[in-house]
Amino acid sequence: MADKATIIVHSGDMDKVYSAFIIANGALAMGMEVSLFFTFWGLQRIKKGGLEKGPLSKMNMLGLGKWMVKRKMKKAHVASLERMIQDFKELGGKILACDMTMDIMGIKKEDLREDLISDYCGVGTYLNEARDSKITLFI
Amino acid sequence: MSEIKVDCSGEICPVPLVETRKALRKANEGDIVEVTGTHPSSKKEIPMAVKALGLKLLDVEETGGVWKIRIQK
Image (cartoon, rainbow over the protein chains, first blue to last red):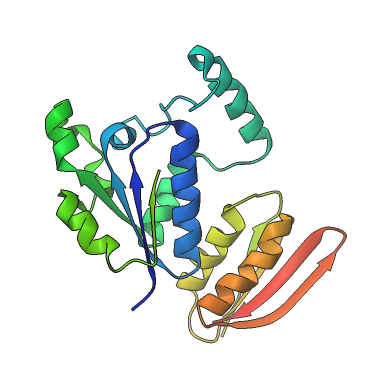
């Protein structure tokens, strides 16, 4: 069985979601299995049209900071989050959505990008995967 | 046996690594994947991935900041 990485994506901040996908796609590229658990603010990012909507975790300045960072990222040829999520799925990554967050925030399955989501689950599923993982991160 | 070329010139982390993996997944046993790029860390990291995947690293060369890595599946 391949080594596994499980990452909890709790933050919905753009820069942190980038970190999650860069690590996840790197791990897949190096032959690992990867599961991403989207919970709380992170879950907002897998709502339809929500992926690129996250603010910057620091110096967002009502979006001005984000706009500046995004411009610099474009110049440096950083891939978009949409491309990263498509690569993630192509390389066999699994996306899990926290059903408790869905209840609290009144998010329905049809509000989410159902085509990308493997399962809707709770903490038990995360632990079941995390206990067999070489790497587990909370972002 | 065929040879697959992947050009990642100008791309940065993690694209060269991911594109290499995508090409290797599509390749058949025995095929050669040749990746070209300019991102310095990827020149070190693609061979790490090749090792982790248990594949054969044929060649790594660099001229004027452009590297070329050849991998056999």
